[in-house]
Length: 316
Length: 296
Image 1 (cartoon, rainbow over the protein chains, first blue to last red):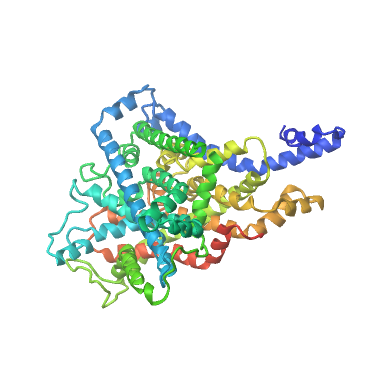
Image 2: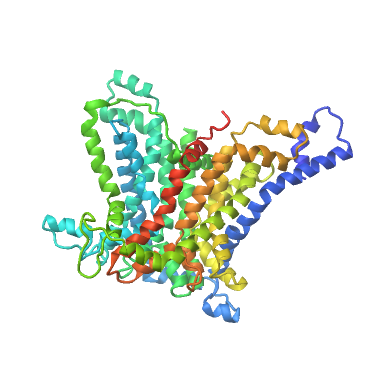
């Protein structure tokens, strides 16, 4: 079938129809070509398609550890979702997810852009220093969590020692329910800055220098040059950075589990960690599936908004 | 528009790994730039301090009430001895999982990347869109469903199970990354081979693979680092200590009340080493692979 679609444009010309042998050879080529893609397609179907579908099904079932022994997962309709939406932890998780995502994205974007603009000025060693900025990437996320848990330790952590020098009493960064989310956002911002800086820097590099020269003649320098030349030129890079940032930030689990485990008192519980807790701590797989489906919907809504915006930008 | 996002994603990846020649609005070289260099060092010091602190503490004995000093004045390797004793096996497990994932991911993703780049078949655009969407699916969704599946087929607590699940996460990105490169291979190169009587597989093995070496190395590197750093898959798909990667080892350390940070930081340093070694060794492949300039 694919072979015929492949060759239709050519056979439509006044060329005589291919002999049967030729057609068989073309068919074989078509099948060979499919063989390149089929393993990956099957793999994605089994390891992404199946889990997504299974997750949707599980979210309508009472799926617990008992299911593994009895094989029974009774249907509960919207029961899981109702239970999820009525729980106070879910409400907390939604608020925390919003704060965590917005806080992380805004801060790491602003700092990343500032550093990118700074490093664009090409002073001695700027390339070298910019390269070293990527050093934190060498650490697996969970290792970064370990390091930060140690840095933020209330009694002997480096940050409180440093603050102690200026006379500030030890701050319970990860222990106080009112501070833990701020601390976790801070660590996530630290992780995101190198990515933002690097991508925005490469975006800045692609702004033609002639624009600045022309702008300078018209009196656009400093902030004006940034606002009227730089920002419009890097807008597409900016949207990529922010969309990728949001999609990845919504999924963050490692950092939060490593630093606080979602505590204290659920103050750092997000949708992603909540889904983990429901499934793998409480062994309520049905409820966990319902929470993670909410998370997927949130991601998709954001991606759709992005696509709508970028389409509109193209139309303009 | 879907493919647009794909390209942007890959452009983003390229940007990370690419050194661009400098086009400067106002170059400040020489003595004039020194204050900027100092300021840059300050920014860098703040950003890199946690990494320094990790290495610093890994060389100190911080047990009991003793707190770490700002420099390892009397370095000790006791932390590393403890780390090796407690985490050596986990380190090997991570190595097995990482390498296994690279082999499986490349075996699946490389032909697919070429197929998607070169053959305009029905459904390729849809498949590309699906690959992009997979990037948005949280790993916890995969873990949730795979736990029940693996429980039924006996793949929990096994290397094969973890390698399969890690590859699941890595394959889409590897395909997108390599496809972006393979699209830049001139079709004439492959067509010449086809005219000489080679079939598509022969042409793929003898022409496309050698040309794409840099892109493949880059994909292998990202895949290895992804699998090596994986935490959530291992956390959810293991319930015993039979197969335990080093990320779980670190998590177990910090899950309880830590009194001695030396071994924890030593383990973190060890867990960061493969990334450092690989990036240094593979640097020239990455820049070239990400540039996509092998056939200019």
